[in-house]
Picture 1 (cartoon, helix red, strand yellow):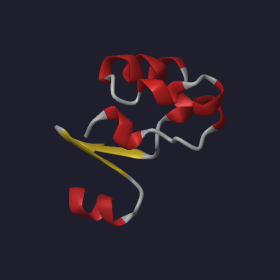
Picture 2: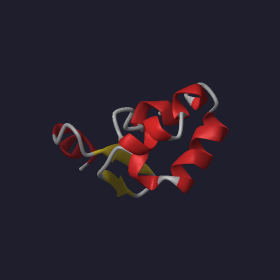
Picture 3: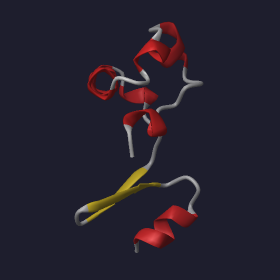
Length: 64
């Protein structure tokens, strides 16, 4: 997935920091996620070398 696919675009920090302009720049968006972790969709479930977003919950079943 690209970073823009697991960013919470409705999150106040996303809006307050004008991050919409960074949606096409993966590196800049990763840096923004590092600085503002609340903008990441969660939970993220990791198993071995694979990870999925926990929403919808069916994604977790696909992972296990």
